[in-house]
Amino acid sequence: MVVAPVEAALFERAGLPVTEAADWSASMPDLRCSLDAAVCAVSRFLVAGQALASRLPARARRSADERAAHDAIAGSMDSARDIFLRLHAADLYDDLTGCRTRWLRLEDLLPAAAARVPGLVPAAAELDAERARPLPEKDGIELAQGLLTGHVLAAPRQGRHFIDAMLRPTAQAYERLPELRATGAVDLGPVRVARRGRAGFLELSNPRHLNAEDDVTLGPTECAVDMILLDPEIEVGVFRGGVVDHHRYQGTRVFGSGINLTRLYQGRIDFLFYLLRDLGYVNKIYRGITLPTEQAGPVAPVMAGHGAIEKLWIAAVERFAVGGACQLLHVVDYVIATRGARLFLPARNEGIIPGASNLRLPRFVGDRAARQAILSGREWTAGQPDAALLCDEVVEPDDIDSAVAARIDALTNSGLVNATANRCTLRAGQEPVDLFREYMATFAVEQARCHLSPALVRNLEVHWNARERTA
Image (cartoon, rainbow, N blue to C red; front, side, top):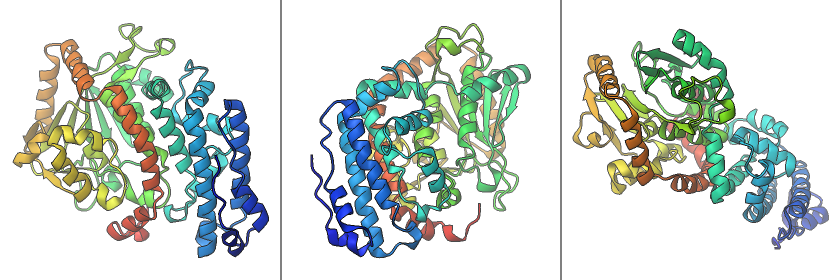
């Protein structure tokens, strides 16, 4: 397999050693060999490419010729990664997980891959340096993470194993679970969990940013979902936004305003945010958690020995559900919204893929309306006839607390075995694991391209005035 050499003149204009750069460009190895041989060959090519690219100035200081040279080098490296992964992703995953006997979350799998195949995905030091840059100045090294994740998910056995690994409870959830069991409440900072009767309330609280989600909220949200699913005294989960202090909504609750665009533009939100969110807590709300036998000790005996735990979920939507918050409405079992609440996916104006909404939204509103929402910014307003496809119940703002309490009682007063069984079988027909796996395999690569695209930077500057905002 040969990648055509980049013209020597391009390297010369960029100030790179022409012979060395051209020789490297023409040295793409043939990777149709054993895993170990391919690892050595591709790593040698990638490390040499990184060394070549490191001679260029930082992105913000590059000339047009230097940018073109860097993009050519990065493109050749990504081609090498893609070829290697097409041939060896399944074997590499088995190698890293002991033939699927170890369960590595994404944040553990990627560093393991970086150590096994230097250059395949960025190492910790490279990611730290990239994280310090605002979005317009990033070098795009996170695309390699999307390529690896996408290829792993595309392999049926390895992809299913990886999804199962991401459905396991986090270590933090096990650490904080005794506190929830003993006191009925846990404060995780931007997320609070409280058990009230037979319901577990998850309250997202990012008041300055209208309960937007970001790198600060993500881990605590997944921990909260895990604890609600693990606590045997909780039968139903309730997802709700906390009170905000924004001047337009002072002292009122807001369900959520999607991804924190300010922190996104400032480079604080890594590409992995999207994958960790949709493979993590969002998928746990939809599919439940898998409970490893070796970790069942801290959980009540009634849970031990079960392969999975899932519960019904209610969303209490106030004011608006934007972007990622709207995506949650596709995975919960019952949506209660205050009259006039706005529901929409502004992904078109942002320039990113709205999570798994491209997979799930058409089931609720039909393909044509879903395309209008995702591609053209269509909105729904709770209380309007067309919004009935997204909301189960619409109430006046003063009545939402009583409506949530009534729905909890209705869902729990006859037992939940039948309800969760029906939930499970509905999901089996609508979105089997392999359908989700195949979607996420595509999403992992395409979202990486969107996240690192100049179009996203431009959209944030035009539609969000991102240059002027502070975190």
